[in-house]
Amino acid sequence: MNLRVPVKVVVVGFGMVGSRLVDELLRREPEAFDITVLGAEPYEPYNRVLLSDVVAGRTDVAAITMPLPDGARVSVLRGVTATSIDRESRVVTADDGTSHPYDHVVLATGAAARIPPIPGLRRADGGLPAGVHALRNLDDAREIVAATVNSPRAVVVGGGVLGLEAAVGLAGRGLSVTLIHNVQYLMERQLDPEAADVVRSGLEGQGITVLPNSLSSEVLVAGGYAVGVRVKDNGGQGGDPATAQREEIVAARLIVFSVGTIPETGLAAAAGLSTDRGIVVGYDLASPDDPRVHAIGDCAQPPSGSRGLVAEGWDQARRLAETLVSLVEPVSAPAEPVPSLVEPVETGPTSHLRLPHDEAQPSMAVRLGALLTSGATMSRAQSDTGIDTRGTDVVKVKAGALSVTTMGVCGPARPNAATQRAVRLADPRAGRYVEVVVSDGILVGATCVGDPRVAADLTAAYTRRTPVPVDPAFLLLTPVMPTAAPASSPEHMPDDAVVCRCNGVTKGDIAGSCEAGAHTVEDVVRETRATTGCGSCKDAVCGLVDWLRESKEAVPEPA
Image 1 (cartoon, rainbow, N blue to C red):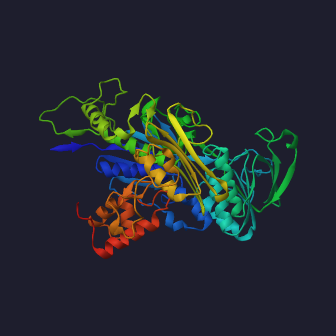
Image 2: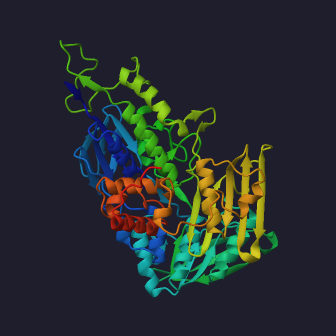
Image 3: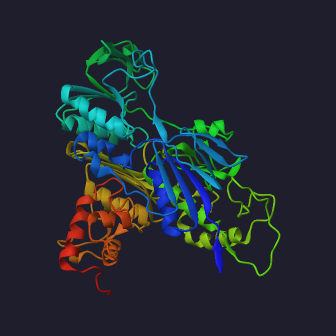
């Protein structure tokens, strides 16, 4: 008879990354873990990436809800905030007075919106004036949508990815929008000046006023309500110092700040864990101070840094799930009593694993698990330069008709390596800019503005490591993979055609889930995770599921 002592895992945070970790664990070993999730928000998990779509009116709140974890050994406590971690006793305490023992605790606390110290931006009680919002959670999106009803003009502060999406979304609702950015070029982390100029022209073509190299020096408030923003030139950031004193007032009753995030590190710091900008972790996503404490997502600071992208957090969730599964030790009923390795603890967490960091030799399960998972995670293996995270750094801006996609080596900060070759196409009058960076016959980076079809091809080549043509200029205009024409019917799609790029879901995956009993789009989403990323594949997934149901062809016949 084989017995298995469940590993107690407490997950702090129930956002996109925390909920993905739970799902990854359940898909691998549903009976191996007792999982407790503490989620500060009172809602079911939702797709934070699509909040800008809610603001734009392209989708509603109900459509961004993500499936709840389904497992007998999972307890989800919504609206409950973790207040302390006792690492010696291995217990997490929550604000409702409950205590939760753990073998491993995973911090997926995310990040809070950064609110700059601008005069007029804080009330006496520390809150924001009416009409001023960040865009970080579901409540923010709902409040912004409600404010659009009585606000004909809006100001968006911050010209990064989310700022662009918010500005385009509000403009799409008919508001007069002004976008204020503190440096000369939009999306300066991802775009070089030429590409940023094309993006700016595209925004202005949608009726958005762009004020680059400008600082929001004051939020104007009357009767507790925001009425405008005082703006001055940022002479210290590439502007003309002689005009640094010029000011103007932009009237608006709706002001949205999108100027970055601050990782939530307070819980970790209070527990004596190392924190910097985020919670410091190693390549194994464990704290250097305690191997039983892990951090993933926006709150984590791994050696390679963090870009704040959901694909990166999902990859961390997958890797951590593989690590935790490798530590599970099945216990066989012994023929005769054997001495216990640890002292029994009545109320604390079970002590049935010996980690490599412990004083004793790692248990056999740990050593075997490490060997077994090393081959399974080859694509994300640790090297001298860290973990390979190719494919988790693709940035796609949801800006209506304006298509902006970047990946890998891109932008003004890219290294000028001798082995890299960059080729670009600049066509500003047509609203198009494409640059590809190739090294050793592989696409290692790209920027694509104004051409979504080329962007999709480049994304596929980048994530799949498809060999590129000898002359990389062919990548600028033609599809990477030679195809005569797009498939006119799902019947003509190959089984390995990727339908959902965020989660790598193919037509075959969707067909397989339908054959296994998934009859609706919701069933397919639950089984494959398709549509839970940027959401751009939703129509394709719905159409494919409808076609499979109507044709009663669950899986194409093998070639």
